Length: 122
Image 1 (tube, rainbow, N blue to C red):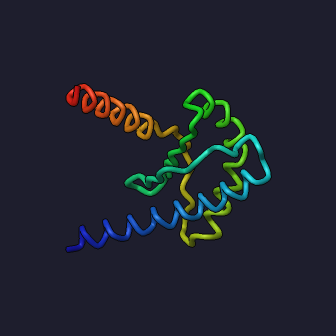
Image 2: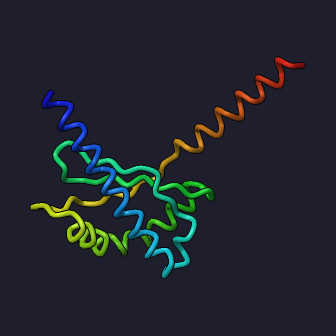
């Protein structure tokens, strides 16, 4: 019972973090054209709640993300401060920015499935 309650609380906290980071990124990208095509896909809070891993996706690919990461890192302190004011707590977790390649993998798998399906019809 207690395990499910903690799982629910963790999911709620991750959802709140996702919402706050998405709002912050929207504000930042409106002022910084270099970050326009960057999307937040997922947010994970590690087990000891000290690191938030933010998964980003850009249609341009991982190499473009690595270029944009330099600009994104400049905004890390202000994003942490924004999280600290939006979410009360004793400590503000550190932010880690990662490229999310799952969307590309899904697209490749769907392409392969469509190809197999079309070959089966022939």
